[in-house]
Image 1 (cartoon, rainbow, N blue to C red):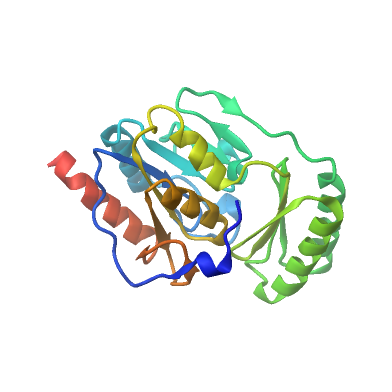
Image 2: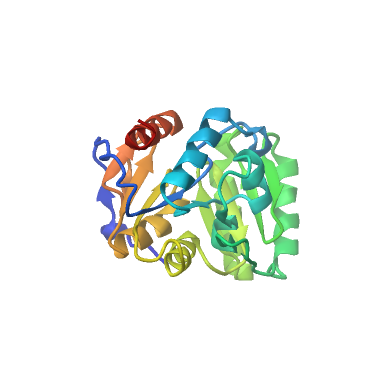
Length: 257
């Protein structure tokens, strides 16, 4: 699913209204949305408040809650204390449904060579972090932002040469196996129980979430951007992960009152 630049809207400084828990299917990104961006991916861990909110949401929504993340499903479960049953990992390449069934995408054969090329760049420039996810490989430059142009240029060339999909995110360039994206993962969840018939709301922070934003809007739902304002399919915005948890707790208050 491709988002055209002229389809995007300027995000206002508007807080979304409280969730209608009776008919919402809620989809959440992880890094930058539910959790602050850390110096390294493995520095992100469980947080008691976040786990408590997610478990309360899963109950209030009758299971209509899913995580759509670039992380592997095992890592999502670790960080969220296993609080969410429905999860799409690796930007949609792997998807676990509410009943526990797992759909996976086999890795592209070109990943091996791409991994070696990115590893060579990481060795040449200190501070770059290579992350191997099996069906994708990511090079983070969050500790060396000035290296971003070189990282992205290398990744773009590899994508053209290999047929791998380039997924640009916040201070990271990722080459992934062709296959489902977050938007297609959201649509797949919406086609099955308990999500079917509900109104989708997708919440995310990064360009990698725009496919899911578009899918939610196309299905009559909403998208909510976390972080700094930018052009996006969302018409709502919250400041950061803490503001998101505050907003979610406010939506849950009538349930727990």
